[in-house]
Length: 169
Image 1 (cartoon, rainbow, N blue to C red):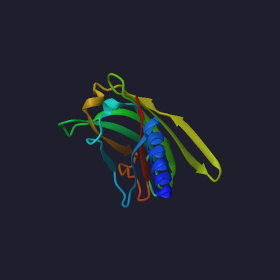
Image 2: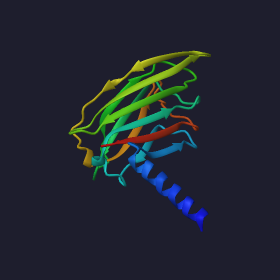
Image 3: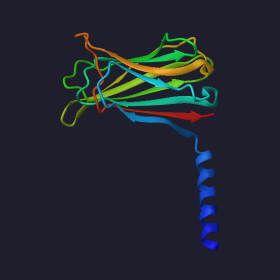
Image 4: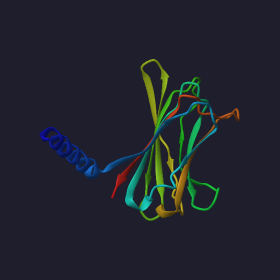
């Protein structure tokens, strides 16, 4: 009937618009327990189809982190390659917002940007260090987000949210 045809046409148009949109969400999750290492499996994705990865991390207030690290995990190994790091200072309790950008041309390189809430209504921002890695996009199997705290007990708290988007070529 005519209503079904209109619905089919609208769904076809929506699918075409989504296919043309250059940004793809690869994952979005929230930690249910605290952890010192966030492991993200990307093995189901063909990284050669993307220009960049955008990794957003919102650390829960219960997080205990001074420096955040983003590492790549090459195919066929459990070794990691440092991609970026950001120093967010001594914050207790810590509520930090981070964006890591990973460029997927040739070898990988990345940059991290952090900001954190010092007190009500006051935020401070830092640019992190970027690290080039001898890791080709087609060999990127996953990511790890870790941290450091001078006390030795760096953790991302329950409620920490991670979102990863990919920019299509």
